[in-house]
Image: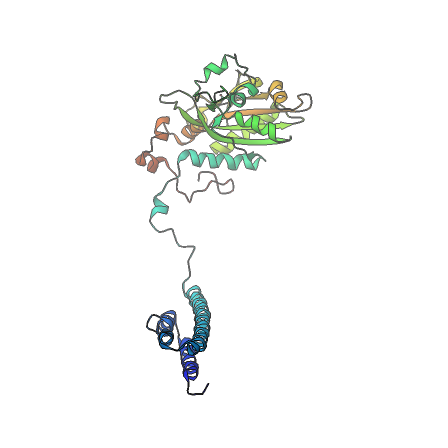
Length: 360
Ligand code: PHE
């Protein structure tokens, strides 16, 4: 082929186009160079259109050449694009700085509120984590076995009636699932699936068919469970006292342990705290049920009661929220009223920590 043939023109064209790519100083210039070369009406596209009018042998050689040119140009465009983008990013990083010490701008972040129950749950987790507890979870939909039977409440046990349980329709095997009536289900799940020593809290939603100013059909509990070889009631008392002091952010808390009855603990107690703690001296407020885990419960979960002992407690999360933050009506907790949430809710920037003070 002679130097003045179509291939020579192609060489010149390629050099020209490659130069325009190298010269493109920014992404816009590069895009212009791309359109001028391989766009619909670009110079290389125009060369390709010549193929149709060529004789077969000529078309074969020229087609190969022009395709190779297009491939090299495309590659050069990509390379240059990558370089220009990297340069643009470097420039942006060098000139745009975020001042993380500036106050948060007014907007959704400052206007949104954390629900008091979520805030109090974070406070509780912070306190118990500091005492070496980890957080366990279980499902809201449970079997009767986990919610009752394994907790030492056999089928005909009267305490089953006390819970106003929401049952599902019977399944294929005739058994009926339920919405858990307490977080004590997570005691069972924890003991069945882990080896002692155990030290957990289990926060979550529970359900009972109750509704008035202090009862809602759904509410929250925090369960606690400790199983070790030499655990006794002194430990239980200490944990609850330390928790109460930390939670109410006071140096001293008046506590009263009243004998009570739960099928899954023996002995069982209910705990009241002196209302003076929250500024109402003379009154007692019930905050939780607790006791030493019943030997039958340990056995039901495959643990040897001669070797292991432990304590459990179950606390009303909504209740301690009302007490700590002086919120009178439980129903408002779950009515999704924005005015209520703006009044009682917490800023998302207010993360409770022991070091920084839980609520200060
Ligand atoms: N599960 C009991 C309730 O819901 C509370 C409780 C938990 C009592 C653990 C003792 C031990 O009332």
